[in-house]
Length: 280
Image (cartoon, rainbow, N blue to C red; front, side, top):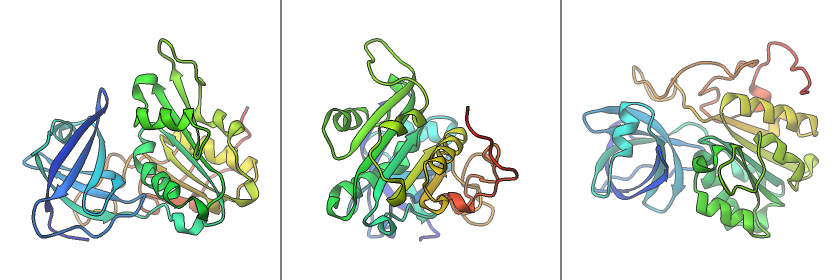
């Protein structure tokens, strides 16, 4: 991990949704960041504007991709970059999804909101080595049909017979949508996994993380095999005096905070102040 930002240049800028862009970045000097693994993130320095943490959404030998939603000044400046634009990068930071620990297991990936950005490298790694795993399930939730990240790839997975088994749901369907409508947890009933031999990876808004973890516990998944992260990022991992992400609010009903475990952790490390009531 480098303490000084290394110069990277935008080689491609792809609009994912109306407010979300994927930037592909390549180093411009002799320095390279240490290798990233799925679930880790970079601190991205928008020149003369500021710094935010961004999950790595694709990992190649030298290039990396970062998926960014425009929500404030720094992210807006990054989303406005086009090929040739420059940024500074530090990292990798945080904990990873630890896919290697799931060898021989069915894999259950639940991604809501910006969650697909953090989980896509894990899915791509699993697809590259199918002999190491059982069934691969990718369940995706979005607010509307226009908010589905990596829509072309996700729809291709959904239309194929697999792997992966992929299903997509939206909260508010648009014209012509014939897929599921509602919470991403409703897609669990159609997933192909053995709870006794499954590792789950969950990333999304706080309410999605909590609801999914509850649903998986009821199905018999051990809490230590439910890996979770919020789609916000932490305050505590970036270095003294440098803010690494928005907010420090806990997941409602738990002690999980953005960055608890840095930012990926297992559900057994999430302290609940009281037993969670059954879903109705």
